[in-house]
Length: 418
Image (cartoon, rainbow, N blue to C red; front, side, top):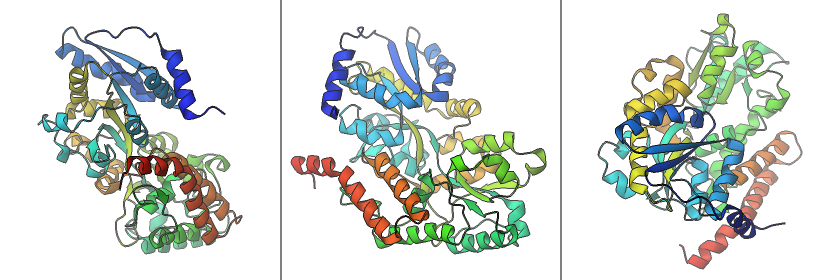
């Protein structure tokens, strides 16, 4: 099997001989829907900078990561790219990105204090800033407030014990064939969000080892598993649910943890009669309002860009509150700056996201995190299905995380990093 170094070398050979870079042409790589609308957004920047052209390459999310690695290996990186927050640690480790602290400090119209702090922290790796949030997302509760009211509750939960009482009451009314909450076994995000609500980190010793056997994560683990043990959540993946929105509409479950993209889906897919029956709420925590995942995408400037000053001006333009509001209007993506929210806060389902964004935390900032989270999901599914004991499962998750972090420990030891 080709190792990562050999792969990068081969990719570099393939990318060699790329066309020379043009002056006053900025290359922006963006993914998915964001890439589709970027041309309209940057038109104003080009009007303010006569003679400057922004060349946009739209990448599918499924191919973007490998294309960026290939571009790095072949010295063909763009000037700016949209990067998922979980990708930043990897590209920082490669030395691909330019630090941005000095530029932010010299840009008074982009105060760090205007950004949600947990989101801002996802862009700070090893004490330095390498990205500026472009849009944000997080996970919280979507719920049937009509069914919650029928069970005797007038407000969503703020603590785990309150939530558990509500789930039990809903389940009692729903009967044996229905449930109270959907926690799809092919999604790791709900479990990670609950884990982030604890004081202990998910990885310990500077991201060198898994910390899933800690007393704090054990509390999350016990709560999560109890929802399946008490038959409050079905032991199923999304693929085993025929139609998420139809099942939500018929009361197969009443709570669901998801992100802001679901607001539009619920409005489009639920019948008109139920449009007033659902709502959103921040996640409850162990002892009060809980944290959630700091997600979204950021804009990063590549170190090899020969036009970093101009690239920063584009980042600055795309970060303007008015531009972010236009971005939200065409994509539904949530702005990372408080000053950009404006009328968005008047939308009832979005209000809960505004509150939750004040309580978000970054996932562990190591390149291996997404693979670790996938292993966490796989072991959690086996545990829910009764294939492994809960305590043994935590030891297994730590062992899998430690194996994935072995190279990181070796590299840090060579560098003498404390």
